[in-house]
Image (cartoon, rainbow, N blue to C red; front, side):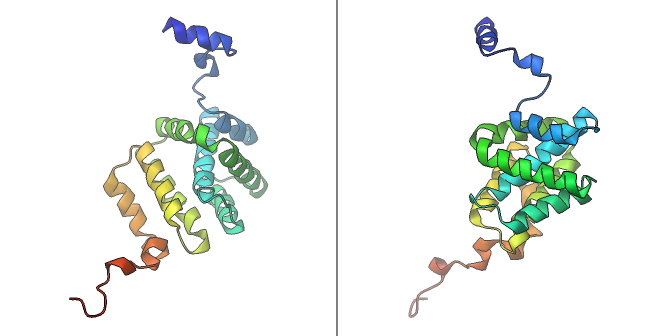
Length: 186
């Protein structure tokens, strides 16, 4: 334990001095939410980051996905339009820039502050962002599955929410041609 404290002091402070902040992305996004209680700011920042994480899963954030993120922040979080736009854009930037570093940290932070019902609502919002272009790619579906796992949601909970977006799942739209019998085969 002393070794880690020594390393932290070399790196400019202890982890505990950051309060409960685990990720720079949450900290930066929450800074746009001044006037809200710190816990609510952290929650909304992590929520926005997870939506962006899904949107950038295929390395392209479409205008429809960004618009869906903004709309969700307005309707679900009650943010004014300009603030929702700024939060969504910064979340997108952070997810692109810090993704591999912050993905798990942000998810863990959200898991610690959100209720089970909130996590399920967030999962639904993640699918809505992915479906913004009327098709959820396999990459986006896998990203949402990974997030659900990191949030410690049960598989049946993931499937229950995913089922509502069945028609938009690209994997089901494409069919499974390799599983169809060839002509002349039984």
